[in-house]
Length: 167
Image (tube, rainbow, N blue to C red; front, side, top):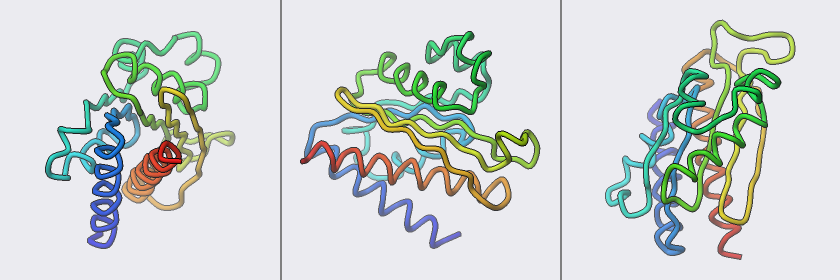
């Protein structure tokens, strides 16, 4: 657990330094991680200079209300899908003054999995003013482990997207 916390702190600190250098403000849209990414980012002193706000949209209704996710998209693809995380990430940018967002939606378990989307399935989207990236991972382990792995993956993606902006 302590190793994971150190790793998240290092990633968040690196993200903050990169965001400051590039004058990029970050926002988050989280479902299964329930604000864990925002928590990791704001653990860095001075993060208010580069972190705008975080949206915890655990329910479908919250995704619709807070992030303008379309109910038709939820009906067609489900909450754990590429299409939804893209709409969540876009919605977070629209609802904030940020230039980079990360969105996460998944099934942390222990229940809720299906044959098509087993427990541990997590979709990610990183969206910026001129870029977007999506990934799907199926993490192993229990609920806490899935959530921790998802937070780490979200942070690694933010760092990668900020590095692309430097190129």
